[in-house]
Amino acid sequence: MDFPEEHARANIDRFLTAAGWEVHDRRRMNLGATVGVAVREFPLATGEADYLLFVRRKAIGAVEAKPEGATLSGVEVQSGKYSVGLPAQVPAWHRPLPFLYESTGVETFFTNRLDPQPRSRRVLAFHRPETLAEWAGDGRGEVSSLAGAGGGTPPLRTLRGRLQQMPPLITTGLWDAQIEAIRNLETSLAEDQPRALIQMATGSGKTFTAVSSIYRLIKFGGARRVLFLVDRSNLGRQTLKEFQQYVTPDDGRKFTELYNVQRLTSNALDPVCRVIITTIQRLYSILCGEPDLPPELEERSWFDMEDALSQPPKVVRYNPRLPIEFFDEIFTDECHRSIYHLWRQVLEYFDAHLSGLTATPSKQTLGFFNGNLVMEYPRTRAVADGVNVDGQVYRIRTEITERGSAVEAGYFVDKRDRLTRAVRWEQLDEDFAYTGTQLDRDVVAESQIRTVIRTFRDKLFTDLFPGRTEVPKTLVFAKDDSHAEDIVRIIREEFAKGNEFCRKITYRVTGAEAEDLIAAFRNSYHPR
Image 1 (cartoon, rainbow, N blue to C red):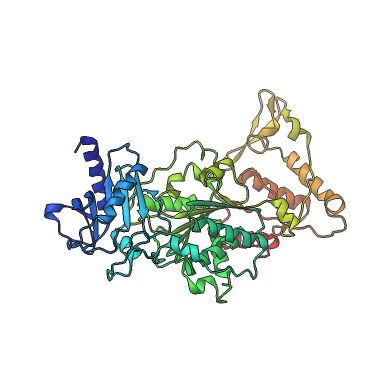
Image 2: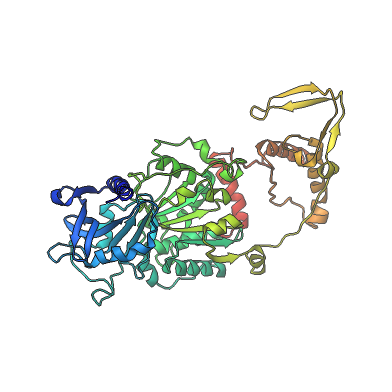
């Protein structure tokens, strides 16, 4: 055995041990030592398996080891021979062996021969012995044949097998776009496409579509556990409400009456929950083995952070407390482009199908999902279908927005601390010029904000909504929290209204009050 392969086997030993396997030499093997035992250099009729995997004293799989840097797709034929070469006197879960790995200790491929169309896939680590036993059967060890080896059809005990025989979708209560999205996603999953992207315009019910799909995946596909990822905590609260309000079309009960749903507020996962909702920040904290995550780190979208794309990707290593097979399906909701750079390894940690939800996919997003856009429902189509209402652009320009301005030397200006918002007055020693792009970031010109708000107020019932007498629900987007603070105050003043008339909703607004405000806006645009 040359040194590169010896080094690879040392890494493989370590990874097997981390996943709950006990590695034995063939001459000293004890199959009763623990649930899962990996035996080195086990002789077979078709050659010597680098590792033969036993669960509860019965053979269940094999590992072919190769030196670091070796390409592994060409090794599948060799490991495939191991699956059929098991001596007759060796007890086995199935013949041929159902689970095959090829590994260099750096890269590992896995094939589940119980799948309808067995296809190798890259995995971060080895699966736990208990997981392979669960996939292989009911624990009593009956021997059965696989398709192509014994003339029979393999039982649909795998998720990928069951996804090919999903019952017809009940379309009651679903829009046409949602029906199309669910059917297309299930077709993609049945073809074992590892990643799929659903693009639906804001207001067309992406989350409702996802919940409908997840219900079918759990009830009919047999998904044990689904992860729903968001990139800030208030989106997690909204998602939980979608599950709580969802009435199952065939049963009539609420989703949460049938299946446990957990929104993580700590780093403790409940293994009995069928759906777990969390931010990707907290999931990374859990994978790193941290006891908890400060809640404020979940309140802000990482997409909003200016340095998110310049940071190196987060490095993720195998955590035995959260094995790679913990989730069968993963949904990511509006996590934007930063998730596919900074958090990529977090998403790729699990051996699970990955489905993305977005209204505005970027090139990075499409690339991450292998270009598998299973649903494309832009705003123009949503408007044509009557799902969304059309809009018009009413542009308000000011002189300093277009050209910037200057403050002459000798004038007093107030300087505001970014963190504390403390204000101090300072006399300018020289002229201070600024551009329009600096407005509301480096420079605050309250007169400019007031001019825009006043124009909006004066044109509201003439140009914008002629004939109306009440101000419609209006969203005003700010550049940052400080900018939002100024806007709220000026709107109240210009409309001569109190606190209830205009409220701020940013990542720094938390608690039930923020949830109620967000829900009020969402309900005005989302019938579901």
